[in-house]
Image 1 (tube, rainbow, N blue to C red):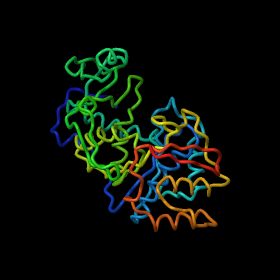
Image 2 (cartoon, rainbow, N blue to C red):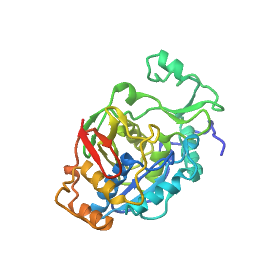
Image 3 (cartoon, rainbow, N blue to C red):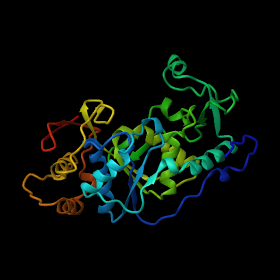
Image 4 (cartoon, rainbow, N blue to C red):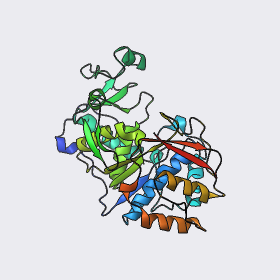
Length: 321
């Protein structure tokens, strides 16, 4: 679809309609850049328990929009691991790589409402101007071809209430920044597609790691700009190897064991504040049934980070930070 800069519909035309759903709908949305590790298990488990404890649905979406980072076969490996750990999803798995038409429709609507502009600034130039993008190209009228596209920030979110972290304050520079929604290489940016996906899938509650607190402010602003209902956000502590460095595929966090899931699952529950010291479970189904019945969001740890020392799939040590 060609992007037109010539039409100017009313503000209401900028909002794309999504599918309407009733009740709680949560989701887990991993990127297929490698197998699931302990940190991603914590995020998956937290969102799963929150959904099931509220008699809700739990969806899985593969966020493969950033194609250079996609590892062949990682999506199947992730789904196999979730299944092995008893984290069975509702409905079909959605793939961002199959939803480009939807993203383009929303982008075209934003362009036609004059909410998008082209930016030629490099990272080096932005760094030289202080490290945050200062909306330099907003009035420059650069060509859309071969340039990054930025969204004009009309609804800056300086603060919001998180379901676990409480009152979250966002630095002014970040809140007011016109951020990229389509990259110079032609790929749609995460900040756009995650909001479009959550709305289209009727997501009502997002439970994920605390490293996404600041991006949440941008997403809330885009929900407002598109006149979408805003989900409830809850950010659980991030599993880190050392303070400030999360467990991730990029820093070679070891994959969890599909053949013996019970120890890692119990460790993830301990990480999330459950007391399991005197309890014995003979199956993952029994463990998850107990966890759902005993889950309370208020009892989750309120830390932003918890250090994890993983000796093997049987032994984990946690230090709140």
